Length: 112
Image 1 (cartoon, one colour):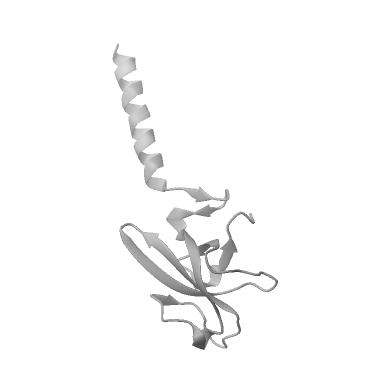
Image 2: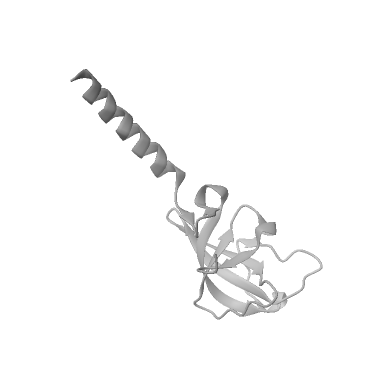
């Protein structure tokens, strides 16, 4: 009986700790590292995009750029990120962005 209570407590603790880690997108983009699911809202030259909570355009600014929207907790945030060369995006498409690291860029959801 004593072992059953211990095993139950350990199982509950493991479950709680794994829930805090958050999801991992595409098997390698961890929520805990800043990766967020986002939706493209605008695409174009940097100067044509609306302002954003975080601007990762950098200097020199080469385009095109995407303005994306993502949720963190109850809040919605926007971010401007460079579109990788050879990638074609449309408003409404799902992408992954790293809200902590502008150098991480943008990953098209489902591209792995």
